Length: 71
Image 1 (tube, one colour):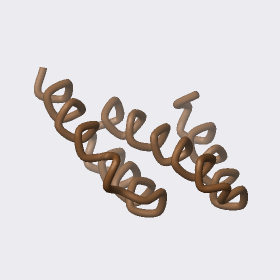
Image 2 (tube, rainbow, N blue to C red):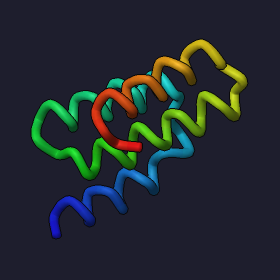
Image 3 (cartoon, rainbow, N blue to C red):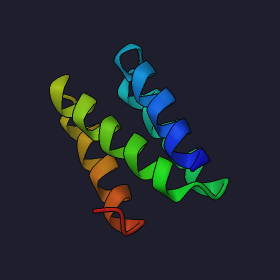
Protein backbone atom coordinates (compact mmCIF):
# COMPACT_ATOMS: atom_id res chain seq x y z
CA UNK A 1 0.00 0.00 0.00
CA UNK A 2 1.07 3.56 -0.69
CA UNK A 3 -0.08 4.56 2.80
CA UNK A 4 2.30 1.99 4.35
CA UNK A 5 5.23 3.22 2.29
CA UNK A 6 4.41 6.77 3.28
CA UNK A 7 4.19 5.75 6.95
CA UNK A 8 7.60 4.08 6.77
CA UNK A 9 9.16 7.15 5.15
CA UNK A 10 7.54 9.48 7.67
CA UNK A 11 8.58 7.33 10.62
CA UNK A 12 12.20 7.54 9.43
CA UNK A 13 12.00 11.34 9.69
CA UNK A 14 10.21 11.57 13.04
CA UNK A 15 13.33 11.93 15.16
CA UNK A 16 13.95 15.34 13.58
CA UNK A 17 10.43 16.63 14.22
CA UNK A 18 8.90 18.40 17.19
CA UNK A 19 5.44 17.74 18.57
CA UNK A 20 3.84 20.82 16.99
CA UNK A 21 5.08 19.94 13.51
CA UNK A 22 3.93 16.35 13.89
CA UNK A 23 0.52 17.47 15.16
CA UNK A 24 0.04 19.84 12.22
CA UNK A 25 1.19 17.19 9.75
CA UNK A 26 -1.12 14.58 11.30
CA UNK A 27 -4.13 16.87 11.04
CA UNK A 28 -3.27 17.80 7.46
CA UNK A 29 -2.97 14.13 6.48
CA UNK A 30 -6.30 13.38 8.16
CA UNK A 31 -8.06 16.16 6.29
CA UNK A 32 -6.44 15.09 2.99
CA UNK A 33 -7.99 11.63 3.41
CA UNK A 34 -5.08 9.64 4.87
CA UNK A 35 -6.46 8.61 8.29
CA UNK A 36 -4.11 5.65 8.81
CA UNK A 37 -0.99 7.73 8.25
CA UNK A 38 -2.50 10.57 10.29
CA UNK A 39 -3.05 8.18 13.20
CA UNK A 40 0.63 7.15 13.19
CA UNK A 41 1.78 10.78 13.09
CA UNK A 42 -0.62 11.99 15.79
CA UNK A 43 0.39 9.16 18.13
CA UNK A 44 4.04 10.04 17.51
CA UNK A 45 3.26 13.70 18.28
CA UNK A 46 1.75 12.60 21.60
CA UNK A 47 4.86 10.54 22.44
CA UNK A 48 7.19 13.44 21.61
CA UNK A 49 5.09 15.88 23.66
CA UNK A 50 5.15 13.43 26.57
CA UNK A 51 8.91 12.96 26.25
CA UNK A 52 9.44 16.74 26.21
CA UNK A 53 7.12 17.10 29.22
CA UNK A 54 4.79 19.40 27.25
CA UNK A 55 1.74 18.30 29.25
CA UNK A 56 -0.69 20.95 27.98
CA UNK A 57 0.01 20.10 24.34
CA UNK A 58 0.03 16.37 25.16
CA UNK A 59 -3.53 16.75 26.47
CA UNK A 60 -4.54 18.62 23.30
CA UNK A 61 -3.09 15.92 21.06
CA UNK A 62 -4.74 13.19 23.15
CA UNK A 63 -8.09 14.99 22.92
CA UNK A 64 -7.73 15.24 19.12
CA UNK A 65 -6.81 11.54 18.83
CA UNK A 66 -9.88 10.65 20.87
CA UNK A 67 -12.17 13.06 18.99
CA UNK A 68 -11.08 11.55 15.65
CA UNK A 69 -11.61 8.01 16.96
CA UNK A 70 -7.92 7.09 16.68
CA UNK A 71 -7.30 5.67 20.15
